[in-house]
Image (cartoon, rainbow, N blue to C red; front, side, top):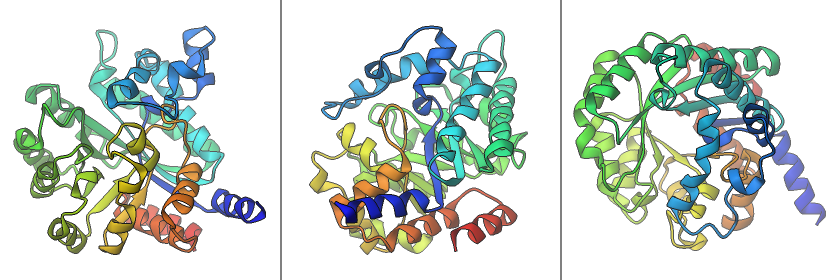
Length: 328
C-alpha cells in the first residue's frame, strides 16, 4: 500500500508532456455546467469502465460540442483544459480540435482558431504551461473543406498553431483517400500527425508515414508487424499511445493485447497520452500509474517517455530547451 502511494506521489510530481489531447473530450464538468446553465451528470460526459464500443464512447461528445460554438465558449474551453493539466504538473501540452466543427454563421474558421488560442495563451500566463494547438481535418469532411481549414490555420503557424491532424472514423474513410490533402499540408509547411491504426488496419499507418506524418495517433494496428515497427523506429516517428481510451473503445480486445511493451522493445518513440480526459475519466498521472501496474513499466521508464514526447513535440527549439530544463 505504501509503495503504491509512493508510486502515485512520484508520478504526480513528475513534470509531464501531453501530445494527444482532444479539446472537446477534455472539458471539466464544472465548465460544461457553467456553459449549459444546468447540472450535468457524470454519465453524460464520461464512459463507465464497462464501455462496450467506440459508438458508446462517441456519444459523450454531444454536450461538450454544444459548449464550443461561440468565441467565449472556445476561449473558456481551452483555458479550462490547461487548468486541469496544471493540477498534475503538465509542463507542455499540445491540444487538438477540429475548427470546422465550431465554425458557424457567427464565427469563421479564423475566429474559431483565434478564440482557442486566446484561451490557451491565458492558461499559459496563469499556469506556466507551454502549449501548441493542433488543428484536425475531419475524415467525413470534403477535400475542399479540409483544404480551406488548413489554409486558414497556416496563418497561425508559429503563433500558437503547431501542426495539423486527421481525425474521424478510419474504417469508412481510410488514409489512402487523404494523400493529396497532406501533400497540400506539406506545401503549406504544416507539420502533421495522423490518427492511424486506432482500429485494425496497419495499412493506414503505412499510408500515413508515406504521406509524411511525423507522428502516429494510437497506431495499435502496428502490433505484430515487426517490419513496420522497425521502419517507424528508424525514422524516429512518435507514437501517441492513449492506453485507457484504447481499452474503453475496444481498440484491443483485452488489456493483455495492448502493445506498449512490444513497441518500447522495438525502439519506437512511445509517448503516453489521455486522448479525452473527461470522456475517459482520466489524467496523465492516471495513465502512467495504469501502465506501471498493468504492463510492468518501470518507474525509471516514465521520464524516458517524457523525453520521447519532447523529442517528437511540434515545438520550436527554444521551447524544447526550456521544457528540457524542467525534465532533468
